[in-house]
Image (cartoon, rainbow, N blue to C red; front, top):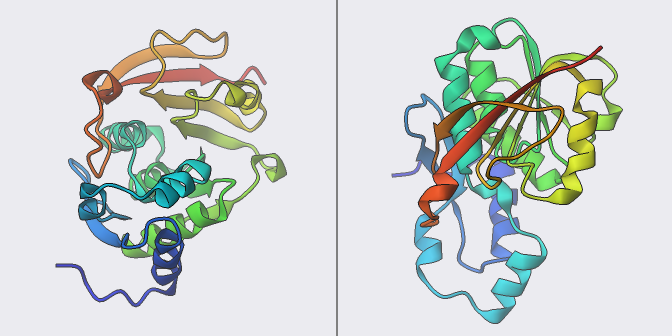
Length: 225
């Protein structure tokens, strides 16, 4: 059973969800193979058919931040299995969504972990999830406002949209190393990125995605600076 929701951030996020799907709410959700939990959309919300108005609102501004996507989950699990990769380092999680990657890095010993997302609601979700896990994150709404270089830039689920590729090309401007996780592209080719592993992930709550979207490609790159 969920604890009584007293966090004003969660109240605001629930209000935002209600404006899209009338009976939606956030619930505390444990994550597999991680000692972390997130405020995610209650799966019972998705067991009914959405109205045409709700469907339109979902398509217009999807609340990505109330899901833990397969690539983010798999990357978080990889970080906690390889804590030496982030221990004592400054990291930034671009397109943070729920903040799961930044949270995993901080939990694994990152000195500074920044959740970066253009969506103000996503950053609110990151703050709520940081409070839930008693972890301290920093926040940024604009990658291009960052002036201090990071040791690692993480990005999960950014390759699905071709409009993001120019952004990927500029990642080396902001960090010494780049690590990208993606479950939507198959055999992705990019001069910056080298595939190093295939991980398994799942989206939570379960969206009954095909098996191919549970295979998460992990890419590494080293900045040329």
